[in-house]
Amino acid sequence: MPGADFRANSIKALADPQLRANFRRAMDGLMSRRAALFAEGQDWAPLRALGAAAKLNALANLPALLEQLEAKLVGLGVQVHWAGTIEEGNAIVKSILARRGAKLVVKGKSMVSEEMHLNHALEAEGIEVLEADLGEYIIQLDHETPSHIIMPAIHKNKKQIAKLMFEKIKNAQYSEDVDALTALARTVLREKFETAHAGISGVNFAVAETGTLVLVENEGNGRMCTTVPPVHIAIMGLEKVVERLDQVPALLNLLTRSATGQPVTTYINMITGPRRPGEKDGPEEMHLVILDNGRSRIFADPELRDTLRCIRCGACMNHCPVYVRVGGHAYSGVYPGPIGKILLPQTLGIAAAGDLPHASALCEACTEICPVGIPIGDLLVRLRREGARAGSGPIPVKGAGSRATLLESLIWRGWRAVYTTPALNRWMLWAVTRFGRLLPASMPGLARWTSVRAKPVFGRRSLHELAARGGIRGE
Ligand code: SF4
Image 1 (spheres, rainbow, N blue to C red):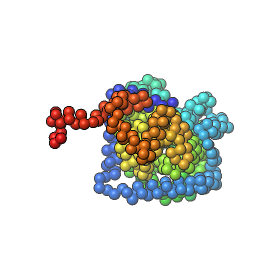
Image 2: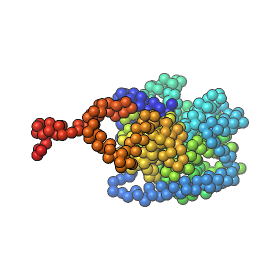
Image 3: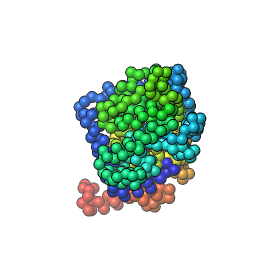
Image 4: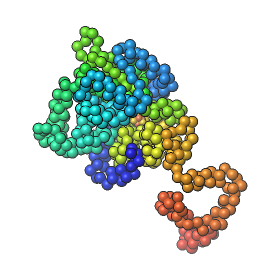
């Protein structure tokens, strides 16, 4: 279950020196590339403020902007579908493909499709799905999930990838040359692009003003998926909408610099509908599936709503001291690192992913690095509170309070009573100063605390002992 095995997964990951070395090297590279673009002394605050303002504006007007986007897209010939849940989203995609008799699908990189477990859903219907992004293609060969939202195969090194491709691709020659490996993948993918019945893609930003779907990538596979097959299905979470086209450059600037340390990606696709009469390329039919999957509930909570600002750049992961040591698979959910720690407990529920907000030292490196200013640290604390008791915010988070045991609840209630009732507080201080030494070194229900902490020494005798050893003077 996502999140539930975080502790066990982390211990396993920490014991794998190869995995740790792969992550360390990759993260160092990403961090230094990003740092080179956000140079010391250069004031990025105005750009960040622009990006944050664009997302805040979109969230402030979300329902109206989504309706505007739908109307614009329908006018451009795009069929728009609303999916409340993952199951509904998968059913919509399956019905589109079934109507077209599609048996082979090429898919560009899309975290929402991972969230929907779309490949499994389609494969269960006998539909072949081929990941067209090189990193996604590599992990698909190994039946793995992404370990990073931008670089899905970042946990593997060159040798591991060479061995995998040699073993899994028919007639492959063993090579550790990156160009040769890329060419090998390209040969397989080209053939599939030409014969695929449909292409699936994600969306980075959807512009309500113009009905433009913006998609960034570096390999060209996204463009192939969205233009070569006769049907294009784009999938997005409902938070991807922005109001105006002139807000997109700032967001793209922040996204590409934060994600890969590039001033701009190799391809920026701006899609405005299917092929029109007289045009030579593009799909005959185009769809947009807008997924909710708990986002409406997140949107309804004024504090947690900030989660939906995320532009999925991955920078918070690269700078998280927990993520860089345990890697993405420890999180077991689709979104690892700090964004996963705030998003998964809200979409999957506290019972399934309530461990994740605790997998943080609250160092706030993520908050500092986030290009759209999400207060990740504050949200982690809020979700910890939600785990301990329901009703910590205006809208209940799914499974709120499920992490608290009855004994813990009683202890904290008692604690609150002691600190909010002056008479009780005075009595407690009197009792503790006289009888504190009678408490056992380890107490049931607090074993995880008391087993790793020495009980403090109270009373005058200990001061005398310290003085006798020369530890204090003047008594
Ligand atoms: S939370 Fe911020 S830093 Fe992390 S992926 Fe989202 S936008 Fe990027």
